[in-house]
Length: 321
Image (tube, rainbow, N blue to C red; front, side):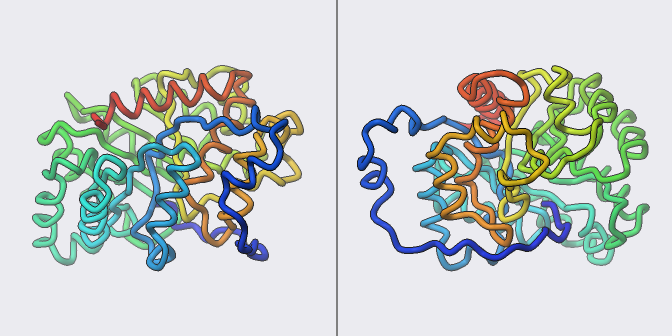
């Protein structure tokens, strides 16, 4: 989970409106714009308290928008337990992960007995991956040595359970790769919420890791970052996954630096969900189709190609039914 403080903006009011389908029926000439993409969100933080009052509606909106399955990340023992609970409330829609975010590494160091709770959660059938885990040197919530220790424990767990491992990395690639390279027989590795450079991405791709992208591509203004990764074909479709990181990483489609051809590639249906239900303060999984359409525009591919490839990758990697 990306714990970085998000940019704030005036909240977009979710004003009362007729049912979505009724509204779309008003203009038959626009129906060709409103076909659903079928997508899978491999990273939503639905255990966040921002969803405590209307989670049913959030999940239904995601489904209506075309998000067929959601992976809810566990980033601590407590949230991993809650993610597992949600996967049992919404079977075949929500799947959970179990992990200790780098920021929370010290909690396991200080209370070692809680590690056994995490192991127990990770063994559940509904838990399809270990993580997010890794290293984050942008914040000092946990000391680097504690992060490395707990990261290694989670890699051992993923190997023992033969479950994919979700990696969170910020400003720590060198140390992270040194740890990963010591392990043999690693299960599939996913670098989630990637925000690095194209050069850093190549180091992951050379190891056959997967890369998951979020709405961060709206914020990336560099010449060497995520956008370049997509535009120059560095990131192949068979290594790509998509996630919202909701309630974080709101995809600001109005960003001034977002190319015009990318803005115009977003369908009116996707914009309708995005602008009506998502804000800087609370992103939702229903924003994922807009993210997929932007990725497709950067890659010069159709949204269907990106949606199909990323959904296939998720189904294959995590064994989603």
